[in-house]
Length: 318
Image 1 (cartoon, rainbow, N blue to C red):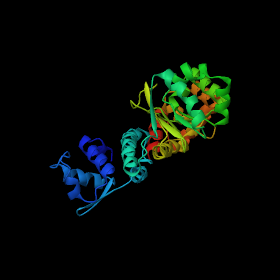
Image 2: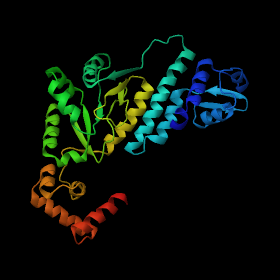
Image 3: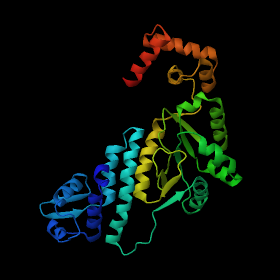
């Protein structure tokens, strides 16, 4: 879907269809401003993407929410880096939603998104939204700790700290942070503030989602901290982003990692951590780390740590 929405001609045609709601292709061809030569192929692409329905000469405009629901089924189970494709579709469809609503209602005044530029302006925007859109159970994807460490935590008021605890704020962070003692200590501080933390192998881009309330995406994908963001309150956009972010939360593991066998040890060993750093990350003794590695070697049939690394890689991908 993102391919057709990235085509300016297809996007302009779909916007026109949403606004005038033609009943037939013949009626649509009467509009001279449209690219007549390319019209058949553009209509076929929009039909294939589920954005319109063609039946011979008849044409029906389908709600952007209908297209988003279809896109969700295809995309939400994909890997994290595919959220970039989802964001492109969501951003384009959100603009088209305005056209859909204009075609069906005279009220074109309700804002559905705000674009906020600059880190300080972004941080100041959240208290405003906390009043108009009280958080329920928000979750953030964080590629690193830079924005939290430099701006968010140092400037938090006591009321904002209490809000973090009340709202069950959740954070998803990359596993690489566990190899740096300063980062682990800061994660511990966030937990003391009331944030629930989970760990995944990699976080590609910052994303915020609070299902049924709002979501936020960086305008430049993977830029962190983002220089500009879009805060979106449209229910269909919020739903599709929340579905994906919640799926990341579901497959992440709680921090601090528990001593529940050798798999957590090998996850960190594969990241290049020393035995001492692994012990500190898991809050276990170095002796326990050595025992877990021995158990893993026996379980995976490895005679050395080199063989263990190869066997673990096969185990992870298999």
